[in-house]
Length: 331
Image 1: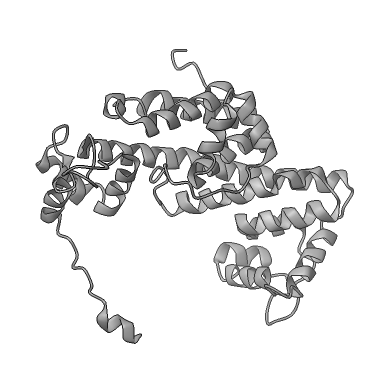
Image 2: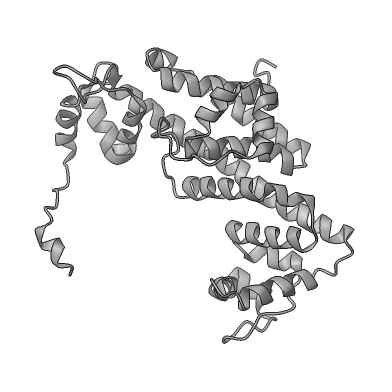
């Protein structure tokens, strides 16, 4: 045990009965949602950490006796945002797995156009992975772990993947099914560089989408801390042009894309229509996004009348969805 740990004071776990008084002390109200209903919600539907994560989207008093406490924040607003976040994650996850699926199809189509045999490029990549000086055999190790799974074992039992030897001669159509999304992006980068393909312009966008995929797959909150400016890297030119085409001005898009989560969601909205080729899949996502954005999200819009941050973010995404995804829900 680290000696410093002896001096660490561990906070006791907060009981549900203690949570409401604690939140009231931060000037969080219980008018639109009673204290009894709040406790019931925390006990049966969501945990304290997840629900209160959204409080960072609300302003605090900067002076006076209420300095550091929240302005116009009711527990009902936090509950509403947690539900919106959950439904947003469901739609985003669907979009991301569609992006992954159609990226694989795109790779296979390019391989066919190049008259590649489907083995050479995978062998080149696995050789590169095997001899990588920085992360040697990372993909090899990942594949070996996966083949213990019954489904993958049936597919890959015919290949020599035992021991520490270099894996060879897995056809690309099978290789793409065993690697993770992150590994798929790395392979796509290698593939596009090897053949000097224009599709390498999507690599950095895909990496941001993968960060969002990891968050939604682990049920992490994606709509908390939306005011944080934690990504100061220049946004991708393709996305800048996309936002400009949506009628979003330079100052607005620069401000929004400085938040990592807003950037990741924006990149996902951009890339979905670039990668996915099925009209039916696109129509389904348009329907789900429109129901979410013009239905559930604005159901309790009065909660956010005094929240300039959330209203501004809604207006930003409204321009994107209006231009690229909106469906007439009255039809």
